[in-house]
Image (tube, rainbow, N blue to C red; front, side, top):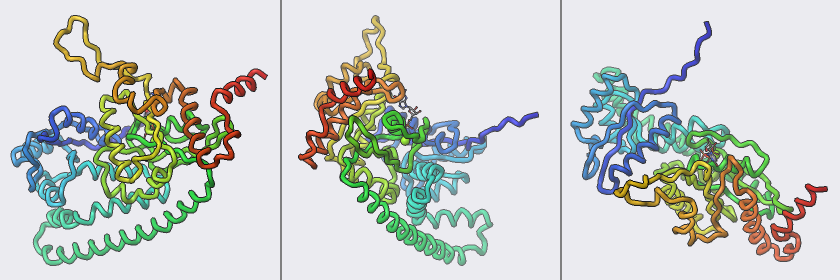
Length: 413
Ligand SMILES: Nc1nc2c(ncn2[C@@H]2O[C@H](COP(=O)(O)OP(=O)(O)OP(=O)(O)O)[C@@H](O)[C@H]2O)c(=O)[nH]1
Ligand SMILES: [Mg+2]
């Protein structure tokens, strides 16, 4: 008999809190995303635990009663992993692990884990490893306590402390080694970028899973890995694209997410340099996602953090094929009409109108809907940047209309 291959998902529960800044709806969205992250990392979420609190308990994050409730559930349901939506302090992680006696992760942990699973090149692996060690350093003592307990505790206390010190030193050494390694790679990457010459550089940016790589594949003839999971892309891909006779460089890079661990932003410096050094950003948005406006805010915040907020930007609203506004039945007189019910035409009249028609485009990367218009907008923007840089090249690049005519004629001949 053939064995059916079974993927063993880690049995997990996720945990979040309702606070003044974060109401129940917000928390639901966050936990939806955390569940998707868990699934991406190889886990299966069996239950969500939530609690209303003014502020998190400094010792155990949740209240003692809630932690007990989670503990009971863990034992009864054979749970391997508990994942908190917020970053836990080293002390909280230590205390909670002690009570629950199972693997306790937070959102940062989970994201780092996904990055580690997905890092393909030695460059990406080095960056992830650095971020992981930085996360680990302040948490070493907690881990030791856990080990100590497993070994029975007695007689371990004295040497335990010294071992923590030794561990810390090893981790610190490793961090500085990785930093040195990255510095060398950074230099190589910078000189590679320098060698790319005068071509205009365009970077795809956006929240994770919005369709950046799909778009890269659709516009170029390259094959970039696409998947309906978070953080499919970690390594930067650069392709030369030619529209009309105007060549430019297009970069596909790592997706953003809210609460992106700061350790990751630091260690992915060189990857993000591609964005920093771009002349034009294509900010891709998944308009079919209910949360797309919040995603835009998160992306803009990260762009600000990496000092790239003021670049010329085209907002690319993708997945219009999948956009389905909420409906209000005709006899429903109670439901209030909100932006959830807008058609795309109505959306265009909102704040999007202020962004300007030249800087917004609505497409479907999978169906190639509105692709001519998309190519035209990129062409015009790239051309604008190019002729500002090389005014004497102006005549080389005609209007997009003329190119289309030429292409048509070529097709007919
Ligand atoms: N319906 C629909 N799905 C799309 C469209 N574009 C992309 N997708 C799907 O969205 C998912 C994510 O696509 P990717 O191209 O991997 O997204 P990404 O932005 O590169 O994601 P990361 O690399 O994880 O940041 C895939 O399942 C795609 O098939 C679209 O226009 N319409
Ligand atoms: Mg991608």
